[in-house]
Image (cartoon, rainbow, N blue to C red; front, side, top):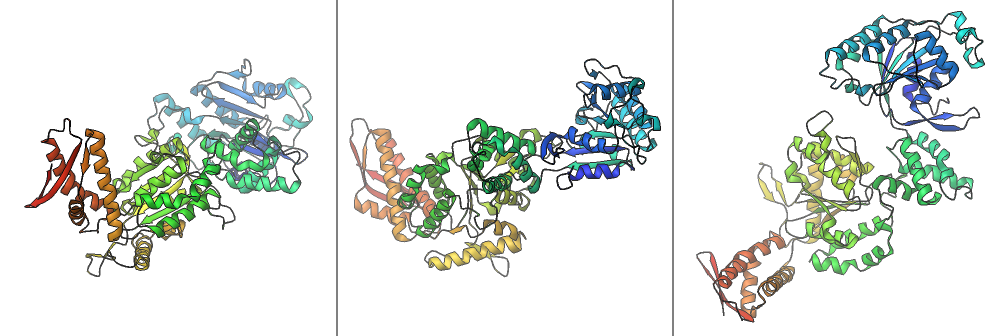
Length: 630
């Protein structure tokens, strides 16, 4: 096996064979390995095959493989190898397997450790399932693991007897491959394959220096690129592609599969073959594997047409935020063109777009997020919203991202990861992000950089097709030298002043208060600052809200509500006297000064047969409003 492709754990196992009697191998154990053929070209093989090739090169003649479901078998499944192992260990194999309990397995371990007839190793597969609960062993399980621990300390490295290299099974001459030199003293090891180290009793590996813990990691870029070269023939168009195109394909395949296993890469290639996804569209094949959808809304022609005329639609729903609207459309165009993170060598699987909406309350931040969702996906309800004030405590992260393995509820997964897996093409809105606990904010580093997040169940959600939007009121109020909360910007301040002060306050919050400048760095220049609404914009917002009230009365009671100009102007003055709370404040004032008293007036009025109701006056007495109607 060439050094550049041999995984580190396999190198460590080979190096430690003279001094370690057992190995606990955990992590990415169900993945494939890249093995070179005799001619030098690597192929994808299961982990057990890779382990065997490494041990065979060191002079080992057989593997005994045990799992709790099927029992014991000999690897490789060759008659000469099976006969050798069966003779040495008195195995009664039927159809290549032998049922075996823990007591018999412990006895087999002991015989194997002392055997000098031929080098061999025992692989305990699915060792995570040996005990029902690793921290609550029954008597039989406890006795088994104590015996295994004792054996790890008592075993010694051995050198096979000289005749083992010259005599085959039943005295027959051995095959040429079996006549390997004895070599230095090595253990006949036990290799435990577990999903996680904690699946075995905690004391088992900790209390024995002869047990080595090895971790199988995810494949690195070079390994994925080498695997991509081997999988390329499965992609339509490979035969006609030039060598430079094939190398470009291998690089792009490796770039877009960061964090995936080699088994996943093979699945992507099979998917491409079945869906007829060509060599030049490898990103589509990877996306289809990750999010389960071949159809890509981001590449639809109608989306570009929508965006071309989007400014008027956005400014109609989010009034008075011209600068924010222009910046948002620019970022949206960049996302549609696939240029997010284009300045980096590899954009990886970053989200399609990231927006940080900052500014006063009630000026349209959440409304713009809904409008974007409507624009892109045709339904404003397609957005996923999280109110981050609900995650102010660190333990609330378990609800958002899933509890860690072993904790109560970990198997339920996280609300965020589950929602994104269900709707990978979506706008994900994190409202009032500054109210979340800093430890929870750390998780956004992985989302913004790698575009993925894994929950407590081990399920991965991919954010590569989503737009991430944060909203915040940071910078409107700041703490003075005495720690008092004072207003930093006010209605009437020029937009340049509002933008500058809000941006500086956001930078101070992440850099100094949270000591997490890396989060701000991931957001980059995608901060969109909203301005206070002006008096003329407030009048437009008021007019729209009043029109909604008139329309609701018409729909509910089939009555036309008439509001004369003088009443309208008086009501406008009441609702817009304080603009510090933006459009939401106008709506709240309209509800108190008009909708509630209107409901009282209409409730007492017989509407049967009436086609019109006119508001004649609005009266305020002792801070209580009344509406006169005719």
